[in-house]
Length: 193
Image (cartoon, rainbow, N blue to C red; front, side, top):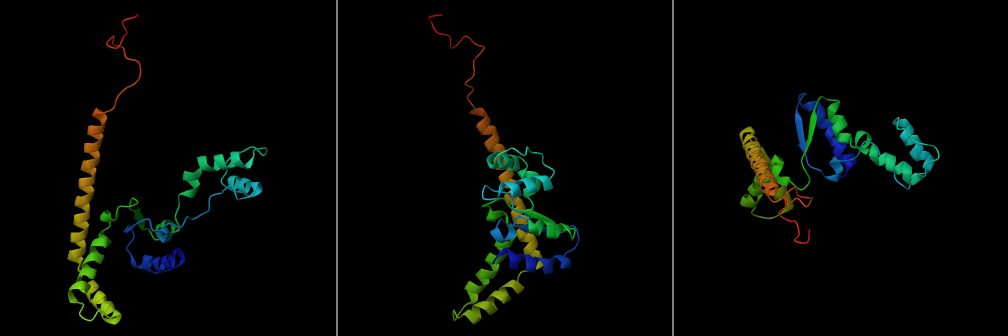
């Protein structure tokens, strides 16, 4: 899979979705092609200046490349954190929700794939590719709307558990913060004063 293939497939799927739908995707590289390249030190100074000018970002013509790249980094978020698939979806009134990196347990499709693969494992008798393919397609046919809803409900419970853990960690870590600044108290004054 690569970005070109995924974007082609995605462009065919988008018209089939209802407006205001939410598409949940992970951070696979082919989901995450940037809409625009960010200038790097390998760019010419003139090209970096052109990029900054096109973004209405001010700079001094006498600045060296390193200073220009620093300015680029300051404006990175507003100009660079846009993805091709997010923009494609937006044109159809669709929202893309990106999962946090390394959190496949928050992706309901993983549970669906597990059910389909489990069906193959349970029913595979010959271990030939043709049978595996047919069984996989049969397994997908067994994924009903109710099973999807169940997978989503499970993910929502996982999210709630994670929110609870975040709050607990915040509460516990706040109690362990040690302040190393000056104290108003005389508890730590030396005997020589």
